[in-house]
Image 1 (tube, rainbow, N blue to C red):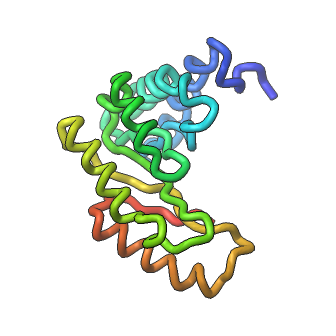
Image 2 (tube, rainbow, N blue to C red; image 1 turned 180 degrees about the vertical axis):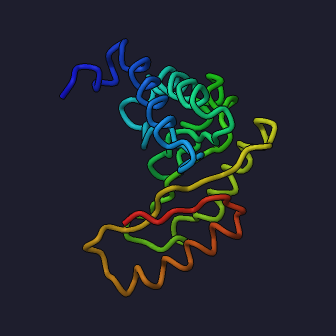
Length: 171
């Protein structure tokens, strides 16, 4: 694995920005929405601010009109969103993104609708004018298929009711 892949190295943020520039260039005419990372609310959460700034700049160079979202959080991590907002990271983004997984329970048991409403409140505190995305939700592939078939439409309906602009199933 190349050395720049380690997010705890000083060169990672700049390398990520360049990778995102190349990605946005290659995707020109094919994609205009970019999520800057994946579930960076874990061990790399303190480093994410710089990585996101470089990633956003890289995309904006190639596609100035692209829609940018933060790294979708594992679950709905309001604390992480608030931390990134305080650091100014979310100011230059067009969307806030979460991954509202519910482990082995229904979306209602995890209060998905209410949690998405709390994300909308964060967006309002930031001045509004941002979309809300979820780019992942779902259950482990070994989980009950009939239960998944019952819960997926409910999750999609809750997302629609919460006003999500994008809502993606990952399984």
